[in-house]
Amino acid sequence: MNIHQLSVHHDERQDRLLLRLNTQDQQEFRFWLTRRMTLRLMPVIEKSAVRLEAAQPGVAATDAPSQHLLTELKRDAFLKKADFATPFDNRATQWPLGADPLLITDAHLSIKPDGALEISFEDKSDPENARSCQLNLQVSLVHGMVHLIQQAIEKAEWGNLGSFTKVTDTDPVTPPEPPRYAH
Image (tube, rainbow, N blue to C red; front, side, top):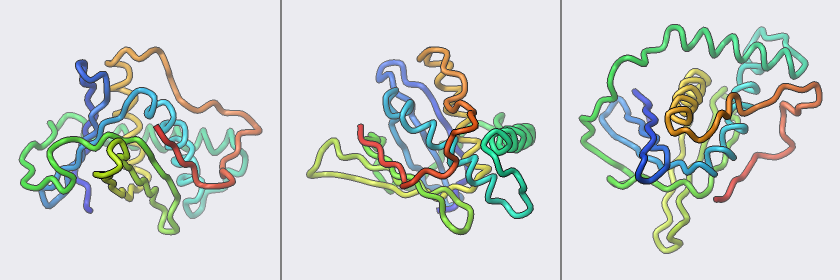
């Protein structure tokens, strides 16, 4: 899947975030993020971005505060050159998961050897019709997605959540096992 654009929008009626992405070959994938899932998922995505940035060749940030600072600098640099002005392209011709968004009830994250964050979203709300989707995001797309989700959270008025991660000297940058979140 070659991701072309990301979009995150708060749906007032559903009180959920609608995460949409489209690909170079005009496929669109849609996901519902509830407030609860968003609050559980975002800290892990942000910590994964820190791990991805710290694993880049030539990076010498060894302690957690330095790694978080490096990640913020890289995110700021990415956001300065990112295109958030172009409207989301609604000309998709294929919806591999269907037209209805996937309600994310479970998420699995792992860092891949090629420097990508693998996110597996699952909808197990109806066990007979369980659906899933696996995304491989380079660190720049992770930064963009975090930024768009944070903007949508502010518009949703889900509270002043600020940054999801807190920098401490004891903050483990490498979790002992891949996180698994169930809704």
